[in-house]
Amino acid sequence: MTPFEVYCCYLSLKNHFTKKSYDYFKYSGKTRTTIKSFNKRKDKYFFEKTSRQKNDNEILEYLVSNFIECSDPQRLWIGEIIHSGETNYTNWKKRNQSLTYTFKNETEELLSENSLDAIFECKNGSHPIILKKFLSGKISIETLVIYHSIFLFGGKFDKKLLDPVWESVSLKIQKYSPFLNISTGEYKKIIRDQVLTPEQ
Image (cartoon, rainbow, N blue to C red; front, side, top):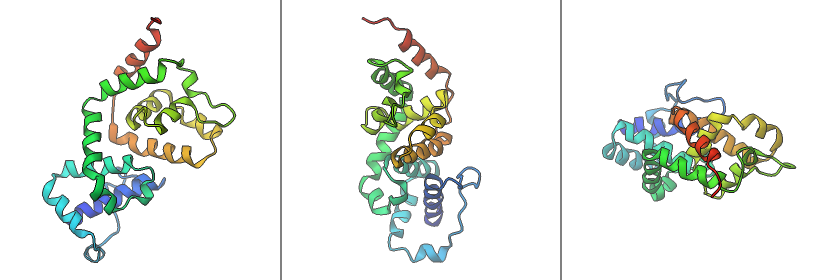
């Protein structure tokens, strides 16, 4: 990618992760920005440097990893990516390169003391266990997305959790799912094996 194309990719992903109406895949990452507006940016050196250091696929992954790592994609700015971008990208690659292993360990974390039904319970508007585990860093966004792909708990949570924390996580699940593009079969087996494992 050229530096301008990296900038366009950044803008389109920001729109994707912050706007319900924008879909990066549907619009093929296109934006209405111009070279003129790019040249006015004081931080354009970041896009020039990224263009030189990473290939097209790495640039996409690098930016996606930073949008999903931050708590509020709307407020993610280039200075933050410059500061922690490589760390976020490295952690993201580690999780995704061993996703089955990560999911298995995090499923054990979820189900070691709770039944499968219990982790989705919303009592009196309080956050369910699976959401608490995510918010506390005990399970990854990837595991949360996989569980949603299998159990489709989002609709239930939308009705019972009327708070901005869940709204933000719900949007992140929805927007990140197409980038994972996984087959749920092996993950269903991991859950089934954990549920059926007799207590020691």
